[in-house]
Image (cartoon, rainbow, N blue to C red):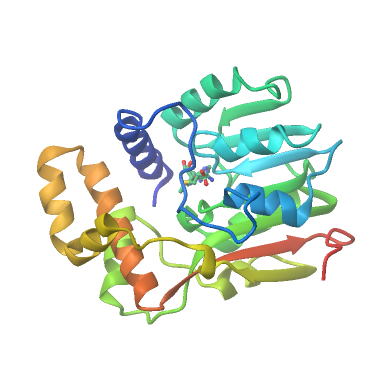
Length: 269
Ligand SMILES: C[S@@+](CC[C@H](N)C(=O)[O-])C[C@H]1O[C@@H](n2cnc3c(N)ncnc32)[C@H](O)[C@@H]1O
């Protein structure tokens, strides 16, 4: 997806969703239910897995409306930077941060995760954002270079394991304007990793409500139908989501956390 159209997609989606959602900040990723009742969201899960560097700097790469960024800032004493290419998301994230006790340590910027300053972060978190990379190996190289010695990159993503000619995959790519669907191996191979740990999160994913089931069945008509009543980019976003669900149902998509460390950066086995 060209950055301009990714920005347009998330601007349109956020403008649409903020009409119906209460509050400014909410996750822009799939709903998960964890076994541990104290973990309410994938950002909580990441925090529990890696621990946050107290004196360091954290980057939330593709931060949406800042839900996870603020959550991380409130659970450490370091600095946290959230970046997105959507101006509407960044405006909302900044408004949300004003009410946070961590407001002096959290900053939101309109910036591209494909152009990061080198040697700047102790932890980079990318939740459901790297699928939008136009050139994954280069993006991952840039992220690895942006880590300080001992730093860590945590990727949470939909990882594709199906065939190249799958029609639902082609629809997802077209609706979301993606370069292609990346596999777990793509995320690992491109990352110049010194250590990589992968955790399968499929068992926590919840996509089975009556509305989402119906959406999956009518995926092919959804964009046309919705396109008549809402911004066509919002229609495409929802239609893409239906095709993503279908790929999960068929076992071609898996939700994974991939931990990539620079030397000395990963203590857990
Ligand atoms: C599915 S949303 C996830 C948001 C957030 N991580 C969350 O889980 O709530 C994907 C995010 O990636 C951002 N994004 C996509 N391409 C980007 C790029 N090249 N640079 C920065 N952000 C990008 C979008 O603007 C959006 O905020």
